[in-house]
Length: 637
Picture (tube, one colour):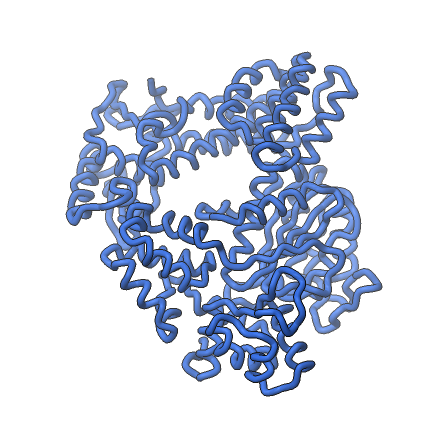
């Protein structure tokens, strides 16, 4: 059954529901929505209201494996049916469904679609909570949840495209449920949330914030033994499934429950984390990196590790790994999780003062109690960056003011937050930003090794395994198309150096060029003189990413890499090969190769081996770019 909209729509207006099976009513009467393919198109348009939906997205939702030649014509028929259902124009006289360069756009109001009403109520509820009006917050959040009838679009989830939209909607509903439950707990009304939390934990057993709310609600209701059992069950599940322990915040809550009676928690750490978060959306096509992700999660859950460096060549997925971990950690950092991009869009580095200014705004605005970093003072240049006296400082790096840096260090010492500094150019840039004490953690992503930082833990990323790269490609072009020529698909990912960026760009290009046989595209990528030309999708260019990394190298390293690119393309090079290509002696060749390793341009064996026995490699696409530069065939704009 569909509940009517909270704000009644005008008579004759259709009201759609996605938070359950796809349904529609007009004047209280259910409407037939047509055959299955038509409902898939309608569901996809409604899941992205007032936003252009590309034709390829609609095609994949209806025909995920093998669209017919008439797919576009059929889509036009299904869209026309949606127009007829909605009415050709809205109250303002504009067309309800229009087609433009970005795809089909469906215009719909809050009173006509449950997900828009849900979002509006949730936003108002959170705003009330932030003002301290918990009773109003609980009422508004409950109104939003009353629109949630079950798993969104549960009748259409066998379509991969619709299933992805449905999972996104369900994640939003779960977050609102957590907000509501934590608000009721703070109001001393935990009993109203217990049963619902139990049901949701059964469906989402690894969602820690749900578990924490369930523990709190049971504990506040006087059911301490059950609350402790929730933690024990979760700890065993994590150890069995992921080899991990619960977050420090959850473990601390467990210990506190062991030592006290029925006292309610004074604050909901889950809400503080949710409202102290400034992270980009989790990467939807994140693939592989299971061991690295497990290691990063374990490190960030340890009180002994405050700084982790994730390094790797351009396009290896460093940012995606860091963001994936940050989104998964949730309640482990009750004072917030923050992401700051260290570079501008053109690849040039921002100044430390600019980055600290952004951190000051983020943490100063959101930190519990308002004890933040003064953002206005953070952008004032001064003469000294406070660092550990044992570590040298690059005096050429624009410094931050002593007062702003001290305020930042005080904030880090008093809060448990996770900071992701993305695409760091060198050690000197971040020394004054790293925590010297306290429970906060920082993840640095960088192409180079940042060897001058200590003590830190390092995770180095290389190419994906073949299976992981094929899995990523299948997400973008569809598993059915990949199965038509698996050998060509393998050639494609290997020609991309199995780097996530390149495989992703190649997959996006193939998703648009649906007529292009995989074997033909593999041949194009296999041509060294044309491969980088083929790895462009819209405004995303692998060559430009390589150019950005090239600019980070010193002039000497660029010259050396240009000369080593030839032997590197033949399957790697040894120290003897480097000496021959560089025209120098052994000691000079070792210094040059190690400088390129430190810069992230050359990879070396993971285990210990002598310099003469080691086989050094350069990622294929960086090799191709270096050859272009060496031969003068390309000059970046």
